[in-house]
Length: 84
Ligand code: FES
Image 1 (cartoon, rainbow, N blue to C red):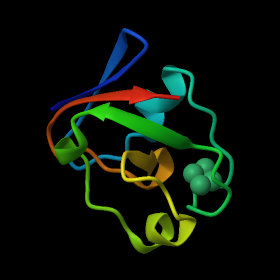
Image 2 (cartoon, rainbow, N blue to C red):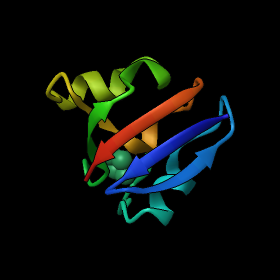
Image 3 (tube, protein in one colour):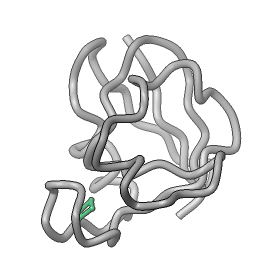
Image 4 (cartoon, protein in one colour):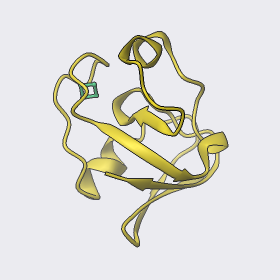
């Protein structure tokens, strides 16, 4: 089990699952959910290692090292603190 924290609010996410539902409940807005639009870019403040590795869509987006596309991330296990 993992946990997503945004601005002090938290939601649990099962290991291996997309973090989209938890992030949506915590206020992240999603567009394409396919790694194309960039609407869901989040800053990882803590816990990058608890998320799945970057995929090609994220590499193509040219993100900063601490940024991820929330729609492309799956929970490994652990606690992830995000800023949106
Ligand atoms: S929702 Fe479009 S890139 Fe994530």
